[in-house]
Length: 229
Image (cartoon, rainbow, N blue to C red):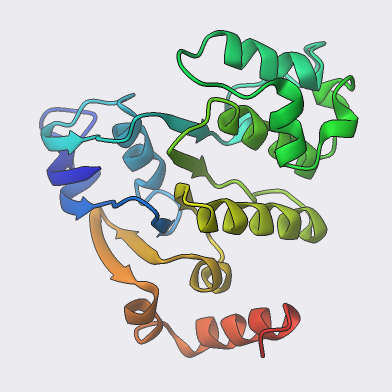
């Protein structure tokens, strides 16, 4: 995927939410997008997905199939009586091309034993794993996640982080919006920071040289907790 001189505003003459952004996302990358609330991270994701049209510039997508995991609070009624298996089945039934069975997709995220449970009855971490299974069921070559770990307990976050890291090692390209700098430095190959409409693109090594002492302390603590130090 290539983004060329991208500008975006919700009004033709309004303030630019994204201001002259250019970058290339190559196969096999794990790109984490960092930035404060309101820094247009989710807007950028929607432009990548083609859900929004650039005001100026281009988003050139050469990935065959994109899986998307939105913030689950955005688009799901937790009281709706749908089972975990039905959520996967409905998604694969509307997807063209190769797909996993619901059982295969749920096994990939360790949720095969929850197939017949109602989605709304699951914990936040379990729900997020099901949403990732739904995205993986269409066998994407690019997976985009919008704050996948928000509101999830530490144990569930660890499971999801390990799952994404493993999938990336298997060759899946991943773009994820995150707030945890330590996790981003641990798992990502590249980092994009968004601030006041401007984006800066780094390798993790380049970004590590620029982070604050507090972020470095958090990173070292994270590595120690995971047995890497």
